[in-house]
Each structure stands twice: as structure tokens, then as C-alpha cells.
Image (cartoon, rainbow, N blue to C red; front, top):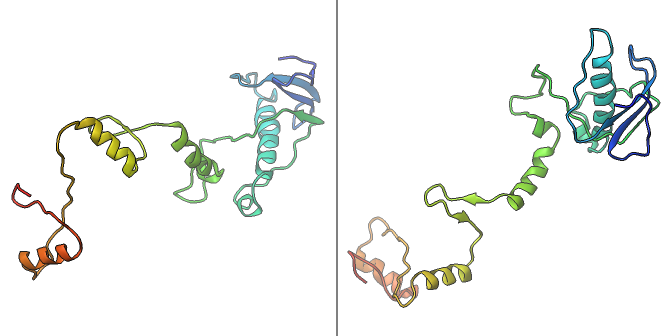
Length: 192
């Protein structure tokens, strides 16, 4: 971490004039995409830097992107005492205390991230059948026909579906009804 911040570097988060709580107006550059540990003795400004400055500004900017309706569910955060923060990504802090508004609320529901994940995941993941372990793909009549023709070359196949006979209806009455509907064949007791 640089003591003097060079704000031209886009791979870093730049803090200028941080003076929140016990911070004394210093400049700092932090690399983005890296794990950063803030440590020091009690009262040195760790929480003031991490939560009261960085998280507060990241969360404040993040919440500004939501609709007014969604914003009402977030606590309003004041702008931290800092001259400038450049390159800060949206921030979410998860505390050990459960401060969610309802029993069904999660970080994903409170931040609307779930809605985006529902759009993203079907496009980037593959589902597998738990029984046969094949990839589950969207099918249409043409793709099913092609798969059957490939799997059963030169073999006659019969595609059938169950159709229960309604109560108080005899089999002969039901069969004549099916003929009126345009059905040509039926499978019964192992034969067509």
C-alpha cells in the first residue's frame, strides 16, 4: 500500500484525505482484486478505514443505483469524511448479527443480486439428470425425432402415452371416442 496515492492507476482504489473518526487525513492506494488485511493496535483506525470510510462510500454509491422503492429497505449511510475515493466498487458488508428485515431475506434478496443470478445462471451452468447423468438440454419435436432416429436406426418404434379411461365408461365406448378423435392405434395388454 502506498502512503501517497497515484490516482492514475485504474487497478487500484484511491483514497485521498481520509479523516473519518480517528483517521488523520491520509492518502492511500489499495490494489483491486486482492485480499487485503487491515491490522493494527486498538484505536489505530482499522474500523474507521474499512467500515466507516470504504464500506460506507461503496454501499452509498451502490444503493444509489437502486429504485426508490428498493432504497427504502436499506439504512441510509452518510458520506464519509474523505476528500475523494476513486475506483471504489460496490460494497456489501455482512455482519455476524442478523439484521435482515424478514426471515426470508438474505444478502441476495436485500441487494437484488438474486434477480441477476436468476438471469445469469441458466446461461452459464449445465444441468445434469440425477439418474442417467446426461446433460439436460432444451428439446423440441425436431431434436427428439433426430435423437430417436439416431438411437434406433432401422428399428420400428412406437411412441405412446397413458390415457386413463374415465370412471363409469366402458372400454369399448372409450375406444370409439378415441377413434372419433382421430387416434388410429392403441396399446393394450402388450400389443397394438
